[in-house]
Length: 161
Image (cartoon, rainbow, N blue to C red):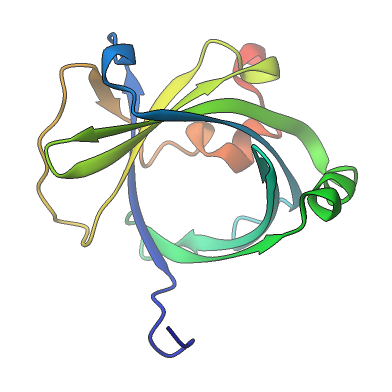
C-alpha cells in the first residue's frame, strides 16, 4: 500500500468498563508509552508493545467528533526505550486485552502505575455513525471526555483525580 492509498484517519470510541470481560480475551499485550509532545493538535507518542517499538503522531479531533489524523511507524525497541527517556509527564503503563465481539475488535486497557484502577474499552469504526453491538461489560461512553485520553493521563493521572 502506498501513501496515497493509506488511510490516516482514526475513528475511535472510548467507554468505561463496568463488568467482567476477562472470559472473552483472545490475547494481551504489555504497553509502556510516553509523550514527546503534549500539544493536542499534534501529539507525539513513543510506545513499546511487548518486544516492539513505535512512534506515533496524532492530530486533534476533527470538528469535535471522534475522528482524527493518526500516523504510526515501527521503530527498534531499543530506540523506543531511549526516546521514552525524553518523555514529558508520566509514563503510561497498561495491559491491553483484545476481544472479538460480534464482528468488531474491542481493545480493553487495564491501566497500571499512576493510572491504576482505570479500565477503558476502545473500538475503531469505519465511520462515525457505524452501528455496533455493545457487550454487557461496556459502560458509559467517554469519547469526548479528554480526561480519558492517554495524552491527558500522562499529565493528570487517574490516581490524582
